[in-house]
Length: 397
Figure 1 (spheres, rainbow, N blue to C red):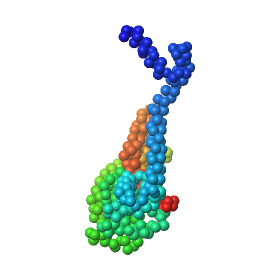
Figure 2: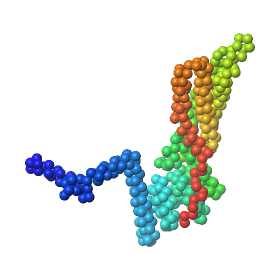
Figure 3: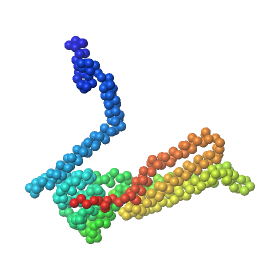
């Protein structure tokens, strides 16, 4: 094949790839307007792909396909009869796997379509709510609040004579608490789980012994022994680091309070700049920084001397950590303001020198926000946020 034949073959291949309405003059001349429209179309598609809209569309498509598949599965389950026990066993394993992964939508629609799944048990005679408590899936367990048979479910005991309260006392791997930041917050969430389940169980469940002769509380203490130690170590390390920073701020601000910018009047002993607004700002912020840092150090010392019982992780220790971190953040912020005010007093009028330095004074505040503010928000949300369970779940059976 010569060069001209190759060129002709290439042109024909290109023409076959172009839609029919874009070909004019007997299929050899392209419509410039249509080509320009194609270019704009491709540019828009590339832009949407770059912005992530294509990815969102694909995710939405997968979700629609999943819902369609789930709908057909739910419709097929009621047609199963007692002769398909093997299929029911497979369904039990599927439901348990979905609960372990926290797939609320799948479990909700499956059980809503066939209430028999509600009473399905595994080889240990555990139901879906036992699995939900064991794997710490709060949305799935919240379904129990809308059940008329709630008391029946709560009174069930598994093969090892474990109640649902014993499930709350057990500690398993690969649960949502593994994603919680800090061992102390993980311990707090475990105590919250146990108390929430304990609140809806009968009082007699607290004294029921399993096959190991352990009550639910004793089982909780046994399984969470290492987590409690890790939480204590995490709390003490954090409190120690913050207490050192607070002590340094106390030292600096106490000395700065007697090293007054501008000096003192030799006759009266009063500050020369005492009527200046910047001096008043320096004095107020220096005092606030000193008082707040002293408060933070005392709070962190209280954390270090705590007894670290299981109940302390629920409210007492997180509350102290919130107050201590907030006081430390406030002391750092006021210290930087006092420094800026003192600098303006000493270098009055030389703003081209002062402005960059004052700008750098905000760096410690920003660093503290990035390093510790996230922790402060997590502790506050975990301690004073909404409860674990949704008691207003709509009826589903």
